[in-house]
Length: 166
Image 1 (cartoon, one colour):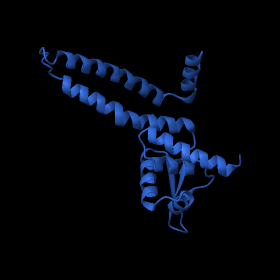
Image 2 (cartoon, one colour):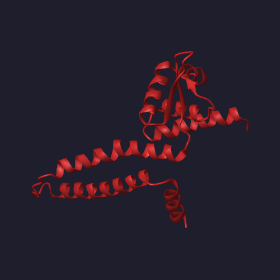
Image 3 (cartoon, rainbow, N blue to C red):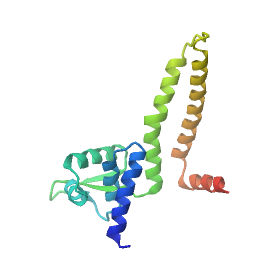
């Protein structure tokens, strides 16, 4: 398989995976296109390379920059912004986990805290209050585990995976 075929498959599959993670497919495709590029690219390069709209590319670049998955530079000669993907897999995974924690775990914890604060434990609400308390406890454990993974070093994370696989 030549590079262009491999790149095409990677871009399409990364887009599909990104969609499963709650990210627009076009954002995942832009990310994969930048990961598979040796040099920094401007928005126009991405538009022509992927054949998607300028609006989609610009939204994807803003989103990826917000996640800390891009490095941006400005060319003095062309006055254009150029983007290069962060290519360290550990940094990518760590930043994705941070964002998922912020989007999923934190709102879950806030909801459970809001609904269980001052719970009256009436007969009608006892079952719901118990469920919310258990979900809150599990959410706190998940949050603690994610924080540890995010703050840990790559070697620590890999050693955990290796232990789990034995």
